[in-house]
Amino acid sequence: MIFKDKKGGERGPVSLYWFLLWVIALGGISLIVFAFSSYTPDIRLQEAEILTQEIRNCIIENGEVKDIWAQDIEKECGIDLKKEGKYAYHLSLGIYSYESCNQGVCQESGKEKELKRGDENLAALCSIKEAKGNVPQCYEEYAYVIQQGKPRFLGIKIAVS
Image (cartoon, one colour):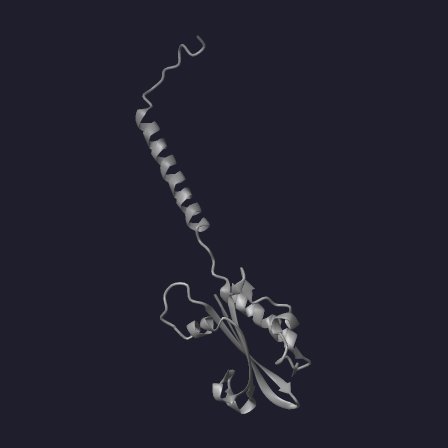
């Protein structure tokens, strides 16, 4: 035999330590992979911000608000407020008087025109701060605009379920 002079020692304890080391390492890697693969990021707020930008770019032209109040805003701006056949968004557009706004926040009493589309229940859930579970993400933005030669603020509020 080729290995006739080679002496083998006991390999029991060393093999057990290597086995335990591999089990711990592979178990840790498996836990990390499982933790990251089961995480679903919530991108609804970013979705609302992007939708707000698209709407703002669609209805404001050279600082003036287009007359979109009687039109279908979804068709005019090429947006879809539905997912799987039902409304997944609530969109509220409002023109506020210049005097009713202070530091980017406008009072509801100063609203001159309003256009609402989508699911009204989503907008109602935006005001609930302590709600647990799957509550909609809400985003609100105001832009300084000119309407019929007068300074105004355009308020865009979006709720995403």
